[in-house]
Image (cartoon, rainbow, N blue to C red; front, top):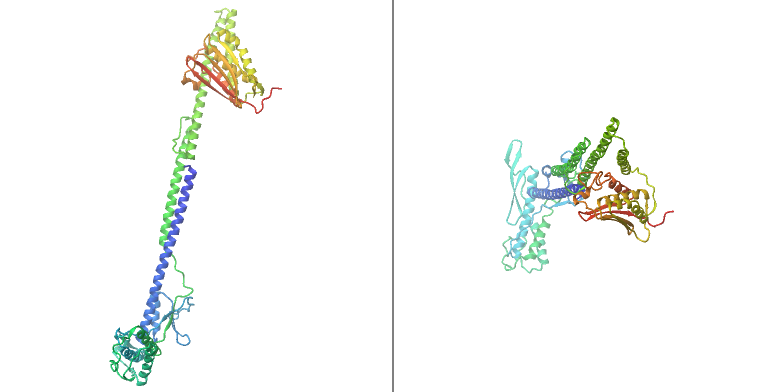
Length: 583
C-alpha cells in the first residue's frame, strides 16, 4: 500500500473512531440519563401522590398540607403546586411561594389527580343483603370519622389512623403538642352520630344499586335495622362481580362531601434547567480519542521521518564525497521509491566518478608510452646519438598522428556526451551509406586477408541523419570487425527495414568476446585483449563514440558475441513517417 493511502487510512480510522466513540457515548449517556430521569420522575410522582393521599386519609381534610408540600419539594427537588378540583380552582400550596421565591409557570403536562377517598373492600361470598348492610355502616363510619379527624387536625391534635377489615380508615385522638410538652387530648372534638334519616338515605342509595343490578332480594328489615337483621333472606345469593363494584360506587358517592376534595398536583416548571450530560465520561472518551490521535500522529511521523532522516544523512555524506553511502529500503510505497531513486542516483554518481577516474588513467596510459618514446628519440636526435634518417622520421610522424587521433576522438566524445556535437541532418540513403563504408575499408580488409561484403535491400531505406557522423559510427564498427577477424574470415554489413525502424548489422567471424566482457565493450579505452596492447589497433574510443552518435540519432546499438564464432553489432535507427529522397 502506498504511503499516501496508509496516511489517509490512518487519518480516516482516527476520524471514524472518534466520531463513533463520541456518538456512542452521547447516545448511551443520553439514553441512560433519560431513563434515570424518567425513573426519578416516576419515583417523585409516586412519592408525592402517595404522601398527599396519605395526608388526606389521615387528617380528613387538607388543612395544614403546606408544610408537607414544602418537605416533599425539598426532598424531591421538584416544584409542587397543589390545587383543589371542587368548584373554582383554589391553590392550597405552592412550593415556590413556601420557599420565598416568585411562582413559576407550570409545565404543559396534565396535572396529577390525588383522591384521598378509600376503596371499600367487600369479602367474596357475601349475600347481597350483608354486603348492603356493610356498605351502609362503612359510609356512616367514614363520614363521622373524617369529620372527627378534621376537627382533631384543626385543634392541633395528632391523629392516629387505622383501617378496619373493609379498608375504611378509623381515627383516634393522639397526643396534642403544646409549648410545654405533649398531653393526651381529644379537645372539644366529638364523633358525630349518624341519624336514622342519614341511614335511610344511605339505604336508599344501596337499594337503587341493587335494583340496577336486577338482584331479587328481600331486605327483611327497615333502614335502621342492624347489619344482622334479615341476613337469612337470600343468604344463598352471592354479592358477585356486579354487586361489589356498584356498592363501591355508592360508598364513594356517599362519602364525597365528607372526604377531602380531590387534588390536582402539578410538578416542575417551564424554566427548569434541562439536565446536563455528565462530564466525566465525555472527558474520558475525549482524552482516549486524543491519546489515540497523538499515538497515530507519532507513528505516522516516525514512519515518515525515519526514512527522511536516513536520506538526509546519506545525502549529507554524498555531498561530502562519500559516494558509497546508501539508504536501507523496505516496502513499495512512495518513501521507499524515493530511497531507491536516491540509491540509483548515488550509484550513478559513483559510476560516473569511477568512469572519470578511469578515463584520466586511460588517457594517461594511452599517452605516456608514446610520449616517452617521442621524448627519447628527440633527445637522442638532439644529442646526436641517432641519425635522423627518413625511416625514423616516418615512425615518429606516425606516432604523432596516433596521439592526434586519440586527442581528436576524446574531443569528439566529450562534445557528443555534452550534447554539443554538431549534426547536419538530412534524408540519408542507408544502403548507399553502407556501400560507401565497404568501399572505404576494402583496402584495410584486403591487407588483413578478410572478405568485406554488404547486403542491402533493393528499395532505398532513408533515415533522417547526419551522413558523415553515421558513416563515422559504422566505420568504427567495420574497422574493429576487420581487426578482430583472422585472415580468411569475413565481415558482412547488412541492412533491413523492420516496420518504422532500420536495422544495420556489422558481423564478423573473429575470435569473439567473452560474455563477462560484453557489458564493457562501449566503455572508453576498452580493448578485447587484457594487455591493452596496440596489436589490435585503435584508440579504444571508437565504440564509445559510435554509441553516442547512434543515441543522438534516437537509435540504439547492441552487441552479441560467441567466443570462437564471431561478433555482431546491431544498430537500430528510427525512420521518418514518409520516406523521401534527399533534395
